[in-house]
Each structure stands twice: as structure tokens, then as C-alpha cells.
Length: 176
Image (cartoon, rainbow, N blue to C red; front, top):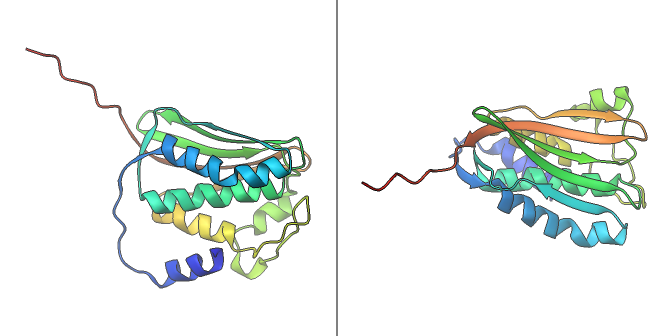
């Protein structure tokens, strides 16, 4: 599925339309979608995005979160924790997907987004993947006008992070 989506993205040259998106809703959908796999591995899933809205393409943002959380489940040991967090910084919202998984050494991190370095590592329960999910995430995030970054430490977990334009809550105008 990720390979097909990535290939489709590479062939599509049309501009995308950004709209106001309820990040809390997408994060809840992502958690619900990953709940069965996480429960099977006794992994806790959390979303801390209450009341946050961003400027994005809804389907692209949902695909990024879904891929990042699915990957986190794959590389987190039983009893671990995965969190989707959003934090407002002035006009922007920083979105993070953090896990307490097996982490990666620096040389693996530097190769994550290189097409010619595609390798698919097995997850903590033998899960398999195509090795294209993170390429898809990077490309989608770039099409949203930002950059996907990663911080990881072996045996301490991984955090994927990107920023989107934030939408301020609409305040009601005072009655006259």
C-alpha cells in the first residue's frame, strides 16, 4: 500500500489544496486504527492533540500519522508506549510521533530517507514491511510544505517530528 501511494505521489504534479484540519480528530482515528496491533503487543497508544487545528491536506496528514504510528508499533517492544503530540509554537504546530521502541543507530537514521538504501527490517514481533513507508511520509510532509525529522537512540526509542501552520481557535465576537 505504501509503495503504491508513494509511486502515485511521484507521478502526480498537481498542486495540493491546504485546508483547516482538526488534528485531534485525525490523531484519534490513527490511534483507533492502530489499536488492535498495539493491544496485541501490549503497547499503550496516546494522542495529545486536544483542540489543535492545522493547515494541511487531510488525507496526506492522516497517511503520515498512520504510517508513523504503524512503524512505531512495529519497532516497539511489548509494554512500550507510543504518543502523538502536538504543541503550538506561535503560528506553527509541532507534531511528534514518539515511541519507546528499539531505536536506531546514527548510521541507520542517515539512510532512512534514501531511496537507494531501502532495507526492510523486521519488527520486534517479526513484522515485515516494504521499507517505503518512511519515504512516503517524507514526501507527503514535504508536499505539505515542511520537513520530517527524526531523533533516535538505540534501546530508547524514536521521535519523528514535523511542523504545520497552526489555526488559531476562532473566538466569538462580542455581542453589541
